[in-house]
Length: 183
Image 1 (cartoon, rainbow, N blue to C red):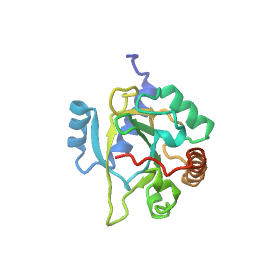
Image 2: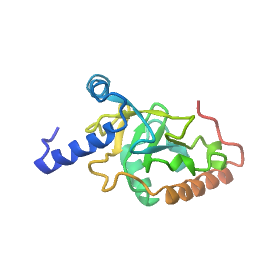
Image 3: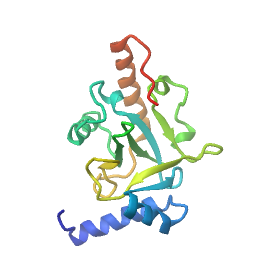
Image 4: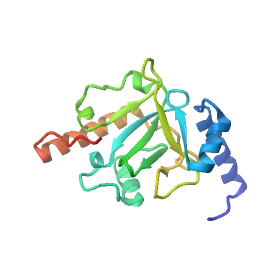
């Protein structure tokens, strides 16, 4: 592991502080990150997260999808912002501004593909297992585009919604059947 420069370290600490704004108990989250590499944080405080199964981006992507391919696909789709992956699910979580869940269409074709905006709008406040910064490769949940190096922390939710809708519609036409439900 390469040592962080002082500028990198400052960015990392600022990103960690940003993430920890969403922790019910900051000390507990820190312990979870150190012991389990994942901390349970509350969406809707400093971010909402859009959960996107890999197969929405490409039907050939499964739990073994290479991080470099996932990054390349997001770049092709011009989706920019902090993103982490859970290869066990297999899904990515794209950080969007808090409150996005209030206008995200939860009844669209995207729900058929298990795309969901997880936020803090009552009564459905969501908690999300977020990997510690510095964890950038599988196994286990990892940052695909960490908030300390992504360039920006939040993806544009309108662009993201339109892009995912196009991807899901193309997948539905390609399959000509109802999408497989991921459990």
